[in-house]
Length: 317
Image (cartoon, rainbow, N blue to C red; front, side, top):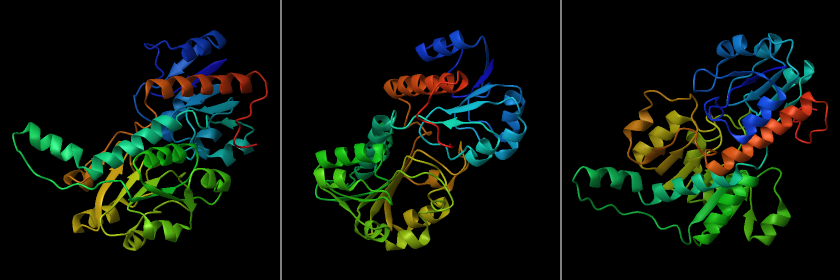
């Protein structure tokens, strides 16, 4: 049984417990040679004769699935599956699984780290101090400020917990909001417009789809408080980066933190000109703990499906 393994943290030179488990199941593993997410044209030659697929952040389009008639299972290494055409996979009889919640602590902590870095301009001050400049920069305290969470799932709940520790008021918009959790944790459920208008800091935890593409744009930014901060640790494309650039230049936005970009890796982005922008390379889930959890869970899902065992994490039944 041939299996393609594309997450960049799962490599033959890094024999983790999860990889050893997969190698015990199949002695024919193929790995991602590029060290980055694969496009459909890069993916097809590697996947076309595989039975199983442990998928990183690759673009698994209908064209890819149509070109891979032997494929029997796609196991996403992570919770998100917006880059997988789940409908095409279902039509082809290919189950798609994910690993919800296993990286929530890691991503949530990074999101709040970006919030602190932007509120106190830590990267900017670090760079200035290292070059011999002794600048004075007035930051923003988080206590008594309002954090607006868009998407109160497992990751959003971690961010909410961090914010409560800093004495922030937390409001949240989620079309499937957990009202009992909000009541138990003093979180105010509100509409999208209310969250945009009231929050000093917005943290995005949304899937990328037709409804959320360019979710943050010129119009929604205009609704926000002057001097707000936006952090996106979910998916690129949710923020219109050109509109955000203009808002940062004008001072409408105080800061922008991005762990996800419309094009990854980003090149020649005008956002990189600005010292009120903090960026990381889609690294939210990259902690030792989260990597271990995601690898073990995604390998188990793949083996369960390929072995005909029950798997509770199939997203395209």
